[in-house]
Image 1 (cartoon, helix red, strand yellow):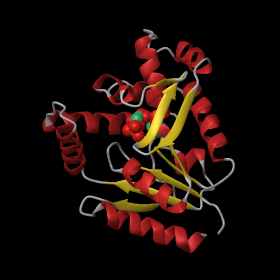
Image 2 (cartoon, helix red, strand yellow; image 1 turned 180 degrees about the vertical axis):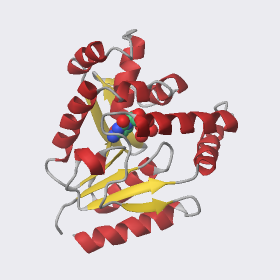
Image 3 (spheres, protein in one colour; image 1 turned 135 degrees about the horizontal axis):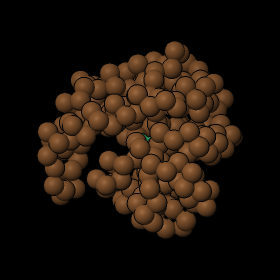
Image 4 (cartoon, protein in one colour; image 1 turned 30 degrees about the vertical axis):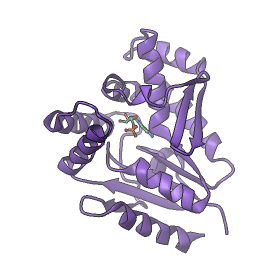
Amino acid sequence: NKKISIAIDGPAAAGKSTIAKIVAEACHYIYVDTGAMYRALTYKALQQSVSITNEQDLFTLLMETEIELQPSEQGQLVFVDGQNVTSDIRTHDVTNSVSEVAKHRLIREEMVRRQQLFAESGGVVMDGRDIGTHVLPNAEVKIFMIASVEERAERRHQENIKKGFQSDIEQLKREIAMRDKLDSEREVSPLRKAEDAIEIDTTSLTIQQVVNRIMSLVQERT
Ligand code: C5P
């Protein structure tokens, strides 16, 4: 079988990473969570009190930062300069600052360069906001995954409860809507469905149904 690239884009909390991991495993491909890379830089900037509105300072920081993504039994692990930050990059503070970091042109160019290196040898499932439009414009399979804000907030809420975290569904709705707004209205490679992407609305689909749809597209193209 030919090794292809699979791009999965869509708004916050639409289920991209859950689906991408399963598809990657089924295909024996690598999974690249590009959101985790922006989160990793955001985490380090907050730690070191680097202003997230200062593009040049953030870029300098990024150039001295090593971000590694490592597959493991429990899903993907994320390391910043060798330190495991897998759970640190999912905190409220990081989540609510990451879109500000991700809007800067210099930051995006360097992230895209690193992401394209990951995909060089083919056999990749990559999820994010600009994968089908900018990072892997030639991906054989492009998915644009959406779901209603209510459904996305509800899923996050259930995840939080399961992890024993405090969770307020109305606040989640507001935060998800705000992140979507920032990501789709920014100037540099905003969140957009690529012209040749296939839209999947997961609102009333199960994980297995979404996986099945993508796997049949993969089979057509390999
Ligand atoms: O996918 P996740 O929700 O972890 O992404 C976190 C944030 O990183 C997004 O809200 C967006 O601001 C940014 N991002 C991006 N481009 C990508 C992936 C993520 O701008 N390809």
